[in-house]
Every structure is written in structure tokens, then in C-alpha cells.
Image 1 (cartoon, rainbow, N blue to C red):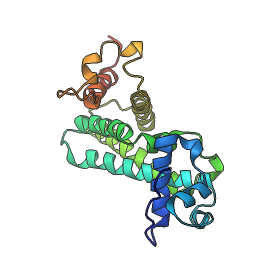
Image 2: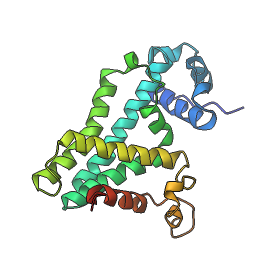
Image 3: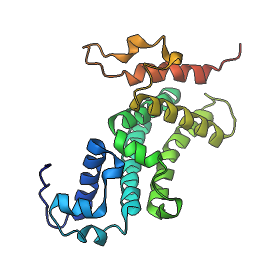
Length: 217
């Protein structure tokens, strides 16, 4: 039997989220229940309902937490890594993919269909918009400096978002090395020390180059 997590008074909401993430990572989303969370933490089975009305509300909070973490990562790339706007835009994309690879449970809930549409809280919607706005800002700066085409900023940002999301999903689901479209990338699937960790930066830079240079000759 999995040992109960020690309950720290006054931090039940955070501990419910942490415990739910552990359960999802170990056993899958279907094994999470509100009463089961209370039992695992060591509080009454009704205590979790004081913080979350139901499982959907709990998942919404997990997704919101994920978007806040993602926004922080993208903001760091926007503000710290490079003075060159195109390089900074590339770094924002890399930060996105690296977040997904490092936080697969958060990521799947953020973009999954487990949260009912009518359960998406205003806080979750705001957090998701904040993450997208980091990418939008990076695109806008490139346009202001005339480094990328003066096309609709939102369409460019959504195209880049779709690309990073697709790469992220393939990586966290372990599909990159299996897909034929990536058959020329085996050397990028290992780090220098042979740990087997995917080199996100090299993969994204290659795909980003295709986007930025275009396919037409």
C-alpha cells in the first residue's frame, strides 16, 4: 500500500493537487477520486470538497497551475536569453517544448478534454491566455523589427503554437523515434553523455528553421 502523505495543516488545497499529480503519474487519471485523495492524504473523505467541488474542478486547478508555470518559463525566454528577437522567439518555442517534456502530467491535463468546457474557470482561461500572450509578444517584437513577415500576428502565433504543441505531444508520448517522419533524427535523440534524454533544442531548431525559412523555393 502506498504510504499516506503527511498532511500539513493549512495547505490541503496544494497537497490535493500534488497528490493527484502523483496518482495520475503512477496509475492514470481514471484512478483519481475526491474521496480517494482524502484517504491517501489522511483527512476525512469530505475534506477535499471544501476546496474543489468535484474532480473536474480539481483538474481545472491543475491545468491553471500548469499554465502559470508555462507562462513563467516563456516569460523568462522573452526577457533573459537573447537580444536578438528571432533567437528569442525560437527560445520561447524551445522553452514551451522543454516545459511539456518536463511536466507531462500537467501538460496532458492542460490540453486534454477531461475538463468539461463549463468547468473551465475564469482563472484557468486567464492563465491560458497569459501563456499564449508570451508567444504573441515575441512574434510582435519580430514584426516591429521587420524580422518576420507583416502577416496577421495572431495567425503566425497560432501556427507556431500548433507546431510546438505537436512536437511536445510527440515527444512526451514517445513517438518521435518511432515516426517515419523523424527517421533522420536518431542522433538527436540522445544527449552527449548517452543518457537517452531527447535533445529538445536541436530538434526544435531544425523544425523551426523549416518554419522560418519556408518550404517554397
